[in-house]
Length: 425
Image (cartoon, rainbow, N blue to C red; front, top):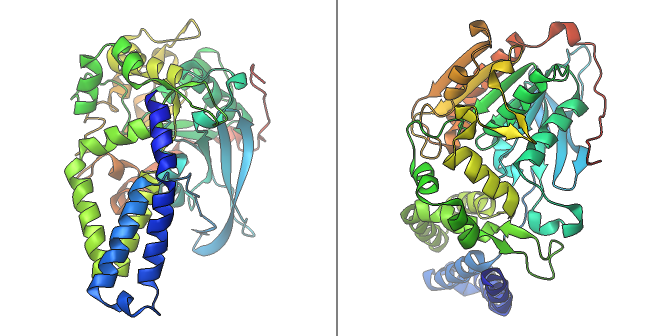
């Protein structure tokens, strides 16, 4: 009933939010003399803070309409090119310059771990000048009707394989954080089957390949609790009238409380600073806060079966590094990977995926030639800095672009993508 209580409380606060929004507008209107006084700005700031901390944040937009290619600005069009009940594949299609060479296709597999794919907006923006970028846009489980069936880790791997089929040969794939495991598993399965649509290279960034190495607080929590504990304490049913009514999920609001509790003091200070920015009429500081928390507080539900299978496979049993992971009864054999180049990236101060956890992929993929492997550790960044921020743009992106350029399949450049429907249709 906890999910229902949350929804009821949110609905009950709607009149108060509307009133707070009206107060904010009244006391921030430049025609109101109080808006130019500390008292008026304080009232407006309190009203906005209340409204923002009690609202539900919707899915943000990518908002990427231009990029720079060969020192020239070109338009970017966002388009869905592949769709399934739990995911859309978005292409950021760039306007082609006359005489320009085709860029490598890059599939960015976004985390399905609470936040929307727009959390990787900076990743997409930084890669656009170097690649024809596609990204997985996972669907909020509360919005998927029960009639569409379940979605677990095996389905996730199937989706990745189907998307690589849809994009065609000589595609590069990037797994950011949580997707590193299913991406690596998907590549191993494709190589074992002799699938000609296996990617040319895979880039794994800040991912939990082997969480026994340098375990973080997140890893230790998963090991201390049983799978039954997670099932009993975090799995709930979507309440009516959401489209996914009755579906078992790990609710987004519960995930958000976990995210924030890890650094609660920082979030409290950030909101206090936001209040003071508003009182002091510091528009830039307040806008930066809004931009960050509009993204950070927008969360989605995960299907219970995907969440529980991931916790069990990755964090409790460590099935992939132990060689015990299976996909629909088929062993996931990382030694089968021979033709796909591997690049791993880690952050020195990563408190989610500790140092060495992603690099472990090199020790497991023993049959990838050494000249097709590379690893980079970015100094002075945490988990977020592995895929976003100034150091990511300046230090990591050029290395990824160079790795893709070095390991593209030249003999397949003329191949055209073709659509392949999944077994689930």
